[in-house]
Image 1 (cartoon, rainbow, N blue to C red):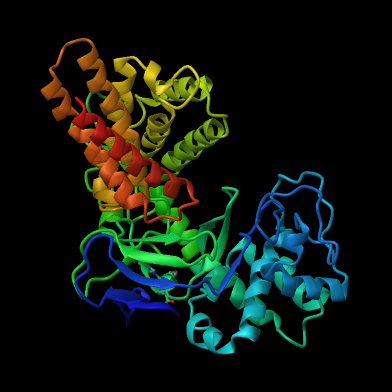
Image 2: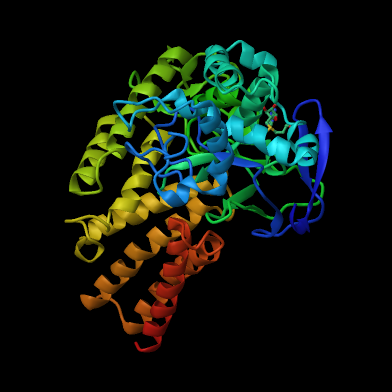
Length: 493
Ligand SMILES: C[S@@+](CC[C@H](N)C(=O)[O-])C[C@H]1O[C@@H](n2cnc3c(N)ncnc32)[C@H](O)[C@@H]1O
């Protein structure tokens, strides 16, 4: 257990199994608890990465065991030591790969092995906090990954690594299931993510409108869980297990496939996603209609136009196909280096799909979110060179994303903090430009600069809770300094 902040209770019901509730009234940003990971390690199907620091790696292997490790320091790291001993003893080496950037199942065994070794080290924590976790064995047995896990993890560890006297295959597969259902993503230093198992955090139930947020520190991987909004004593604490800015079919499919439940939260149940229109399509069979899912809690229910006289319908599989195609295009855009093309191609994409998706559809919103970050930051589009029209476009995109976040992830979240930071810049430059052209007085300039100051204050308050070495933590410190400078410059006006 870490620290003694413990403002939660553990409850049990038929729907969630175990879940967390607030033990007292919590204010926004208040710490509810902290937790140490039981284990940290690679995610399944990851390209080779260093088993010490988790940086991507090429052709560097541990001199002792022959598994990917980038340096002598990482060879000797605590996290690699126990598996290194096992692999060295049985002389089971990492098999050479041609493409070191391609995903490979070889590291799938590492995190389960680390759980098994941590079980031996701390049997009491295993028994009380980990063994009791949900592993959804029956549902996982129906999936294609079950037989892959048997070969790549259970057979590999028990037979090839000669661990039959310490662990049986059933236990290995239970551990794999516990990891699949309960682990969370942890950003590692190189910006590549790994996974970790936090026994207390893992009890929290999911909602697509969460009321808690968590932050992971890079040095010791401790998690700090906070209230994102004010929470009343007795209320359920909800984490979001999936990417919140995705449309209902994508979120529900992910939760069904990897967390083994059908989400029926108020957001999933509402065809308009609580009025955010993150899933809404435009009808091109009539002028003003939009296409909504007739029943989002039924995977096969049709989508239909809301205009009475139109009657257009399409199947849920056709919508899923469309989402997958457009997501692939977005993934290609995300792979571009940040530069003028990254902006221009995204603008072209918005244009291409503006008659297909509602302007606040999750896929268009994710492109607009990227543009809000790119305008002002890339060559040819530096903030002090942007014409007012583009400054306004950046501000509009920030506001559009914030409007959606207010509904789906209300309160003090990292994404909100980062967008608040982005929003301050166009507002500040627009006000200065107006003043420079003599269109507004000194007094009016001071008044207009209050909004960017508020944005910076909010960004700093939210982001300074993050690890100071993380991109968000660094932005928080910059926001704080910029706010102080901007306030000081107002005094000189
Ligand atoms: C990370 S675990 C949460 C702790 C778990 N309830 C337990 O007792 O160990 C995730 C599992 O909890 C259940 N769960 C969490 N949120 C849920 C929700 N919104 N609706 C239904 N089941 C949920 C599902 O069984 C899911 O696979």
